[in-house]
Length: 482
Image (tube, rainbow, N blue to C red; front, side, top):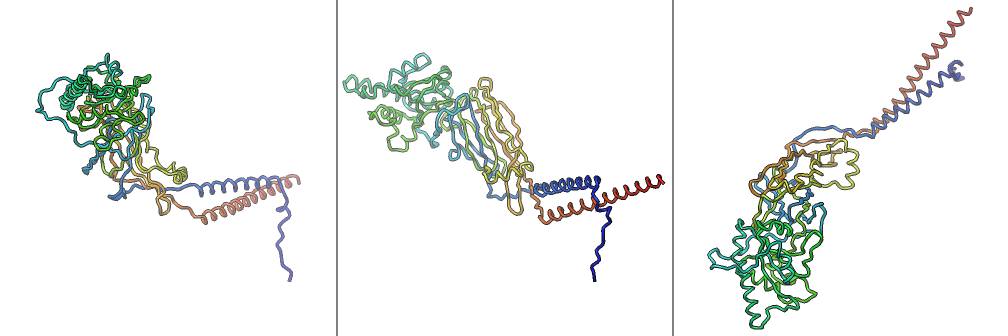
C-alpha cells in the first residue's frame, strides 16, 4: 500500500522578501537570546546572609602593618598589644622589623637591631659618698673639636629633670674621674696606660639636652640618659650631619662603667671588629649596639591577637629612660594596615570573579598620613577606632575566601604623658556570609532548546499571519478590479 505524504501548498514553499526578512530577524533573536542565557550561566549568582561569627576560641586574628614615623627613633620604638581578657604583650620583636628612615620616609640602611629587653640595670647606691665632676661639659661649640682630639669619646646625653639621668650622674662622674686620674698617674710614672699609636686616649663627656637642643637632635637623642660612643676615624659626618656611632645599654654602676671604658681602649688588632664584638659574655654582647642612623623609623610586620576587643599601641618605651613628651612627635604615615591572612596567587584568580560581591573597606587606613608636620604637632596622641567585620565567601561546601573589612575613625588629643599611636580594634559578633549558588548544566541546555523552539514557533506564527494578510489583501484587490 503506497505511503500517503501530505503535500504542502505551493504558495507556502515559495520564497518571498517578507519571509527572508522574518528569517533573518528570527536568527538574530535566537543568537541574542542564546548569548544572554550563556552569560547568565557563566556569571556568579550569590546569596548574602548575616549570621553569628562562627570563629572558635582557638582562632587568632592576624594584623599586618607597615607604618612610617618620621620623628620616632627605632632605638625606643615599641609595639605593644593588649586586650580585654588581660593579655598584655610589650615590645614585640619576633614578628616586627624596624628600619631607620630619613625625612622622605626612605630607609637608610639594613634592619635596626633592637636587642634583648633588659629587666634590670645596676646603679650605684643612692647613699654613695660625695663625688666631683670628672666628665667634660660638651656643647655645640666644642663637641666636634673634642671628638676629633681623642680616639674615643663617650658622651652622656642627659636631662636635669630626668630620674634616670640623676641616678646615672654620680657613677658617671666618678667613673670619668677614675679614668682621668688613672691616666694622669700612669703618665707621671712613665707607664702609658694606652698605646697612642693604636688607641690614643679616651674621654668621657656630658651634654645637657635641655640647653643643647640642636646638638642632641643632631645625634637623634630621644630618651634620657643616652650614652653614645664616638670613635675617631669612624666618626665621619655625612652631608646631613649624621654621625656613625654606638649606643651603650649596659649597667650604670661605677665599676661597670670603668671596666667598659678600659675595654674600649684595650689594644685591638687593626683588622678586628669593634671592641666588644669579639668578647664572650652576655653582658658585653648586649651592652653596646649601633645607634640609630636617622631620627625616623619604619615599623612593619604582623601580630596575632585574640578575636576580642583590644589595642595595638606604638610608642617610645624603655624601663630605664625618660622621655620628654613636649617635644615628642608621633607623626606617621600608614602604608598598610589590614586584618586576616594575605591572599595567595591561586585564590587571587578566583577573587577577580567574586570581587564585585565583597566590599572594598579592608584597607581604609592605607595611604593615610597623620601629623606630618613635626614642628607644629608635638605631644599629641593619635587614636584610631576600628570596627572589624568578618566576611566569608563559600563555594559549594568549602570556604573560598575569608576577608576582614573595617571602618576606621581617627582622633587627635593632647597627651598628658608620653604620646602614643593607638589602634583600638573591635570585632563584630556577626559576620557576613556570601554563598555562591551553583547552576545546573541541564537547566542551561533546557533553556537553550526552549529558546530555539520558541523562536521557531513565534517566527512560524508571524509568517502565517503575514502570509494570510497578504492573501487577503490580494483578494480584496482582485474583487475591486472585477
